[in-house]
Length: 327
Ligand SMILES: [Zn+2]
Image (tube, rainbow, N blue to C red; front, side, top):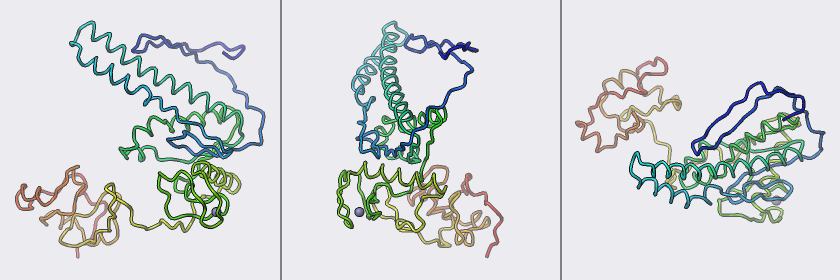
């Protein structure tokens, strides 16, 4: 506890495994650390948790994966115990303890890492990642959650605030992995399995993650100097067909009057506005092409089952966003 401070609140918590946690709230001023002239760019990843622009890599400890088999064992054993029995209670404590072990080791590791980073560097640059969207990829979800990038950035943010450091988040669409840190050449593709590559323009050999972290730092410093948006204006992937989850390319579907219900909330185009109207939606029968209605997928078969395509208008998104003229 800081000197000369009296705790204003003391909270005692008992967690599920029977451990007591005491937290003290004190009113104090946290002094900034002496200024440093170092800055660092971080590229977060799964094989190495972070790669830094200094050329260091910090391995991902994979706390969950390490204890996964143990957790599985105790959870199975718990589910075999009779409900309401003493043994079930003992089993429950065992499960909770494994969870606690995972949380504790993760917290310990992240706190040590972030404190060190904040102590050593004046400016820290990270990518502003959409982790919520990234965990939708079910093949990577567990690894991404286990790496706890969000908590890492959260700790960096509040520690930078405490100690007078600067944390810069750069645009997530900035091509950090595809860009050569030496000459600025941007390659077309950079699949996840490529860990090392040679720049086709200048020939320099790059480690994927270290190169990315150098790009992150460069972009972050550009933001710090001119406050600009570092997203390149004419980035070439703009407008390119996106790959679907199954890996097939999906062409934009043309809007036709036969399939009036094409409008999805938040994605209404001008053509859609012309060709879809409240009256049409009220009387026109086939709502084929509409897939997002009430979470159900009304394919051709479903429509037939529902009575030859004459189904009531959907509830959720038929309320027009604004009044439209019917042509
Ligand atoms: Zn190059």
